[in-house]
View 1 (cartoon, one colour):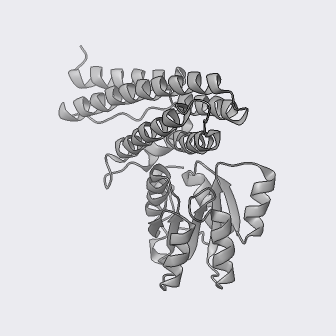
View 2 (spheres, chains in turn red, purple; view 1 turned 180 degrees about the vertical axis):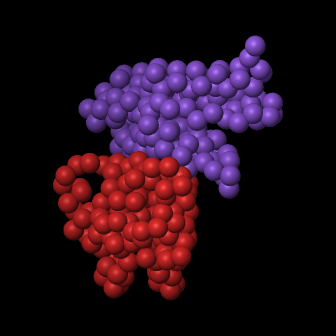
Length: 135
Length: 155
């Protein structure tokens, strides 16, 4: 897919939250979202994601890493769903173990992708979650 | 006769291809290049810098843990190498990622000598990649300074 063919979702004013403790992944995920015109914030662990929502922030999409200190992705997803947060949550992780993936999904994910994220994988998430906008 | 720009561009192209052929880089590095644009012309250099900082910090943590002879915290080593495997995968550092997989296996089986050996290799490998990418970025700079454009290299 060429740069010119990338859909720009800026007009839809989508917002996203990147939840990842690794600076390399934060940087890449934020860039992927920005490239598609999606405004985004970043936090370093599940607790910060929960705190952000407690302080009134809300997002259309959350990219949730699984392994994080203080509060991991599975715990954070469960907590956000208990709080009534209906944002679409996509789990992103390098762990491919079926049991862990199942537990993560059952915590309340809408989708799951293996890292590393690419433009195609992000578009797949957006398409599956009905965020995809034809240009 | 080739201009300086054409020579530099050919050198850049050949060097980039060699990094993939020799297994230093994989497709994920190509994905990073796709994200670089006029708004963030140094995106790839910035991300790999973060990666090399990660390498230093995590390797140091693992070395310290392995230094505790008779009382090695393999769980700590395991979680550090998991993180390093993740970020090496994210930047396309193929050899580093492969060594992390081996190191994780040694850690899971609590193979102390294996962990020490493997960690040394990880250290050597990330420094080698750092030097090679620095050469690549220097070539890019030379092309731009000579007034040329950085060629797109199809792998």
